[in-house]
Amino acid sequence: MNEHIFNFIQKQTCATICCVDEQGKPYCFNCFFAFSSDLGLLYFKSSAGSYHSALLKKNPFIAGTILPDKLRTLLVQGIQFEGEVLNEHHPLMGQASAHYHKKHPMALAMSGDIWTIQVNHIKMTDSTKGFGKKIAWNRTEQSSLADA
Image (tube, rainbow, N blue to C red):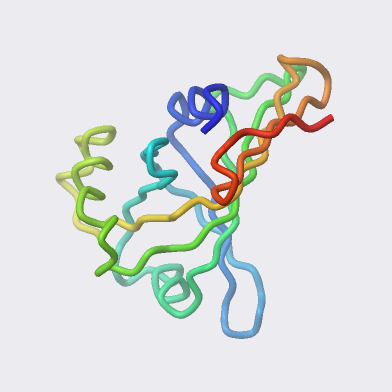
């Protein structure tokens, strides 16, 4: 994964994730997350009874965004990503709880399920590197691409 993308994601704490309901309507939710750049996995915790948990069990394909915890209006930075929620029996789920709670230890006191998103595509906009600068990463290519 591109080091610039990884460093940006590691510094942030909150993501917006969008899933789709049975009628094809989008539904977004915000969550605290942890990220594994080695595996390209994003972890979040959510109540088992939440509406988005039910939607993700039916349709695991998601899109999302990560913005800086502190926005700077003149220097636009952010991540757009696409991925798929892994089912609870997937082999990559083994370290999900440990990885998430390492970044968010206070979350141990709260009930909920840890979810894992296999991130398949990332597009980062980073105006600190030049106006409208884009950096992309694709799981299938396992490398970063510089976009104009």
